[in-house]
Length: 294
Image 1 (cartoon, helix red, strand yellow):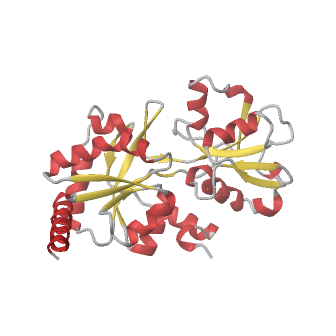
Image 2 (cartoon, helix red, strand yellow):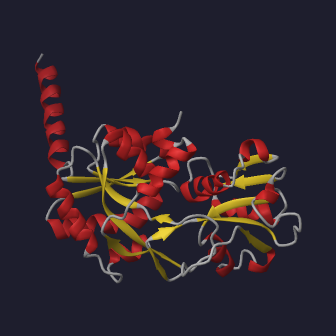
Image 3 (tube, one colour):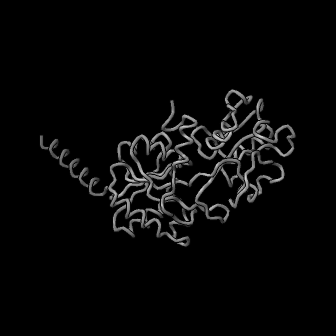
């Protein structure tokens, strides 16, 4: 009996200690390349916020299948996911954006991104989206906003259903794999997130002249692209997180400077006021994906 009581007392003390150590703020981050990379990129942001706010902050890596359950259960206070996943959380679980990331790509400050549709420069049969009918197509994954959904919307707006009008639609899992599939003629056309091509060229992995951009758009955006541009990833709060705390976090994030460790480690420029994610929701409705999946 005494031993049982001793064990229970020890367990109670242990649980109390765990409770005492619980972070004041938990930030879930999509672990698209694994938990280790999340911590490498975002631990410094947690440290920055802890110093700014005087509160303990925990970065919580979340796999694709763990994001929605964590948001629904309010087991994190804030979360950082792609823009389409945010809309799903907004519609289904009452989440709201508090700030938008200013990304740093090839030395450029970007508040938006898009998709680029590519084919081999030596494939004379494909020069437009319409030309992809009857051809094989490669994308990243169905849940990839920049690596599939943006191009899917652009293709659908042309009156084309890729799943019935293309010879095939396959998913390579990673952006670079799609580019290599086009280069090696595994697929005749494909789509990746903007800046992928330029990044791979800069790394010496491919040559720009080996590819052509389909449905090429023109603006002051610094990378080749084929689709509408959409706002970058948001930092968002879950429904249970107070507006007061959200305002504190948003103000601290917007004070991040490009030379701060938080920005350098995350490879971003900083943060700005939350942009309008309405066009992302419109995309989900049009494609019946995310919050609007049938």
